[in-house]
Image 1 (cartoon, rainbow, N blue to C red):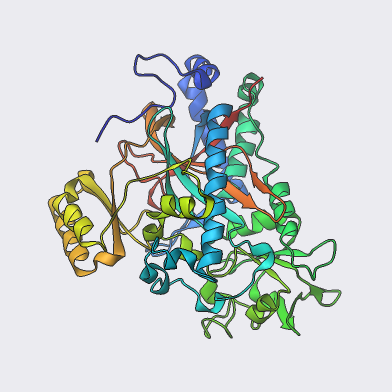
Image 2 (tube, rainbow, N blue to C red):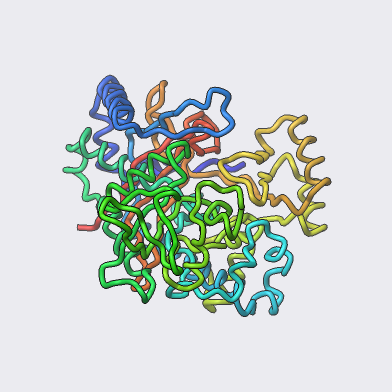
Length: 473
């Protein structure tokens, strides 16, 4: 694996211009001050209750996501290049999902294999021929991006169902501004706090044509036991809309209503943080106590918008990801602005042979895996782990893809031994409304806090950072 690109320091030891003010500040501030501020940030996070639960944990404790107080910095030029690529990619995702549930031109053209759609466990036949409001499916996308050098960003994953993490992006910024006002005085940092205004404008723009001029929006949560419940309540509060559970809603004559103390109130847009399976016990899992009976009939009648649309998972698994460059060319007639990581599809015999011969060099991932689980990082794995994956691959090759081990860029991070480089990724959030696309500058930077680790997921010990996009003067 090649040497990782350091986002702050050039190979000759000089500081890259984006980081010049931050580097000066870091050289002046004593380590004990940094340590004090880190503890202060942790105290604030605990007090406001920003925690998440890890499913399958023996103690199932609510955990605090570690927060690193040294921000990650991008220039305005880097951000503009990145955001153009994110907009292009999200546009192609929307066209692909619409096509898959209607004409299926891309399957007829042989660009994407039919079985990748029809045998996909999250393909929703119920959506065949179903018109959705404004022909848009992915209204909120979380596109995971990594960097490998000064000019190259790769997309690692497309999250098109219910991407999470935006509350951490917003809280990280708020805490940084509270703890380090002097840093913001020295740097022109683009704001992120308007995200919830942009989100609300996006959601209202997606209301069905039957809605009033001021559509009613709600956030639908599975409830307090969900690992991302903090984020659901945070967003509802910031949006100024009701946080509801399935039992708070009912359907009458194909219209969704919310129970209120003043009687039923019609609902036009549901920002749902609930998987397709649990949305409506009459349409999907009959044992779901979390959903709303009859919701799909209201949806099919065009009387309510679900954000994101039902069935978007057909576009965000890791096998479909490998076709994204072809998907962009097919629908947009353009070359992809952001690179895909080269991917071997183990479902293809020649790809499988290559992967089996090079397991010690590759990252192997489950097609529907998430959270950094169910994967092999070849260069870091021992012989037993490699042989275990060899058996898995031979038993069910269609369930896996493999990729080269990218040297993810590093950023300075405040760890126990002081300031040290740690690997990072970035999840920007792309909002697609009926009127326009909105992307707040930055996103959620996740950092692998263990030295040498490439796994940034919070469920496996990763942390987060504030992400700065510098505005040019």
